[in-house]
Image 1 (cartoon, chains in turn purple, orange):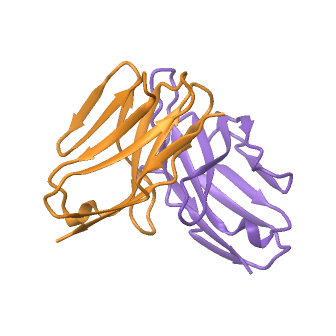
Image 2: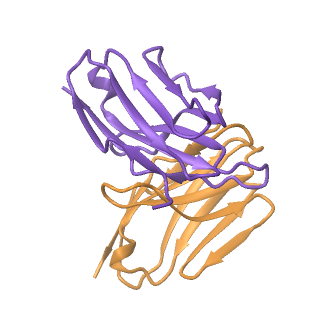
Amino acid sequence: DTGVSQNPRHKITKRGQNVTFRCDPISEHNRLYWYRQTLGQGPEFLTYFQNEAQLEKSRLLSDRFSAERPKGSFSTLEIQRTEQGDSAMYLCASSFFSGASYEQYFGPGTRLTVT
Amino acid sequence: GENVEQHPSTLSVQEGDSAVIKCTYSDSASNYFPWYKQELGKRPQLIIDIRSNVGEKKDQRIAVTLNKTAKHFSLHITETQPEDSAVYFCASYSGYSTLTFGKGTMLLVSP
């Protein structure tokens, strides 16, 4: 499978626990994006990387959230001290950004439930 | 920042009818407008997109039109089939970092 993959697909955690999600982009894609999607809404941008550099973070991304892409390949998104409001689908997308190409391809998402 | 409005929120059609979903955007610098289809429990899938230097683009039964002056773009699906039932999202890219999405349209095609 050469598409974007995410693990785990589902995560149930108790409030206050830390969780970490992983995203593996399409190989050779230089940009990787994290979005959050809640029921009945479109994806909302959280942060993105170009290669290993984190270039932008949304104000939706509180200081409990941290993302890394250490070698410019896979990325992790960590949420510390989870809250019930963090329950959502976390989507990863990747693209080969060249200035002339903008297409983003999404992974299947990680559904987080905070109890 | 960019704001994308999408209408209608739900759309029910009979199989074989056409469906039209409309979006407006606020940032006149936006230059790329993709449409995604998301089936229940699945990832958003890119189905068609259009650049700001093009007014219309077709791919089999789907087409997208763009009116830069009015800052709106539309998705047209002809000869709808039950497998077209899904949530459709429009989005815009304003040359910054990422996409801004509309809230989605749930399309239901009845046999």
